[in-house]
Amino acid sequence: MTQEMYGASGKVGNKVYYRSNGKTVAREAVTPKNPKTNAQTIQRVIASQVTKTYQKFKAICDHAFEGYSMGAQCANQFKKLNMRNLRARASEINQAGQSLAQFYNFQPVGATGWVPGSVILSQGQLPRVATEMAQSELGLYCGRVAISENTYAGVINSLGLKRGDQLTFVTVSKVNGEYVPSYARVILDPRNGDGAAPLSTAFVDAEGVIQNPSWKNKGSIYLDFDTDHLDFIANPVNGAVCVASAIIVSRKDGDQWLRSNSVLVISEAAIGSDLVSLWDAVEQSYQASEIDLENEQYLNNAGTGGAEGSSSSTTPVTPPTDAPTYSNTVSFNGAGQNVAGGSVTVTAPLNTVVVSGTNLTESGIYAVKGGTTEHIAPTKTATTATFSGLNGAANDTFTFYKAESGAAWFTVTVQAGGGGGTGNLDD
Image (tube, rainbow, N blue to C red):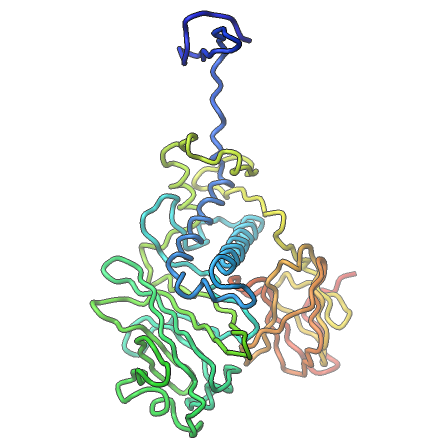
């Protein structure tokens, strides 16, 4: 309801006065709805974390995605992949009835600092060199890679690499309260003629430090070798503690640079009290000062989130419309089994696995055969992901993943003919 008045303007009480057609008109003041629902705040927390992480790793991530040009295209791909994976993971946790207090590592919106989390650093067709965080014999946290034998040739063969490949060692260390990324580049020198030499002599000097400079090697990294693993850490100065690691493989193929898939792995123990769950980050962001609607892109924050929960409840999350979904019924050589239990057994030979769902062309689904690190990629349509030519023999195992940064979905063990499966056959 409006009414005509003269000589008034602005807001008085619950009325707003303004000029219209030469007259002063009064109407009731309407306060816009604050868009800070839990689901929207989750989106902001995730977006803030991804953006900050890209800024920290810009030196490598702006050219780390195979098939995308350096700069804006790679930046957009980094943000797209990581936003999608983090949102999908949050949705999976929510739909499983679990609390987002178990999903690390995030910072509240507006936080001035940065703490590393598990993100995709690069993407391409080269074999992934999987890393984990471990404690070395010196008691230091470090990145660790499993190897089959402690020789130059053994590392190359076990990781599916070639001489001339470039390994970029990525570490994050906490130095004087700040988290600092470091990089070291090592070329698998094709001029090294003795592939059987131990890494301790072919790769590094007597102190365990890479020969630098040595044919394009760059950066400072300390390596330690055992019969079955390789540990790496940036120069631990000033009491620095390594908290995260990754390895990116690069290979030049003609005029094109190929990359490997790489995920930054964090050590929750090393990060310690700085480890913040998504739930805590959302709570702290939600309780922060009200949004400045003058500067906020109000219409760009639409979303649904259901009821606002308490700190002890599970946060409502709405999956993004383009997020892939997966059926727990998976076809093995044409026979369906339920994989919700996390593992199944099939009869040899295992040749074909078909996963069903929606939006699967947008998924990062892949498989890894036991004892190897190379990804097995499926042929994907919107509703199916088909793994063909697996050649699974008795005693082989295959682990399937929904996304680069996610945990294993299910494992398949191949047994000799005549045995029964451990999964639940669908009717």
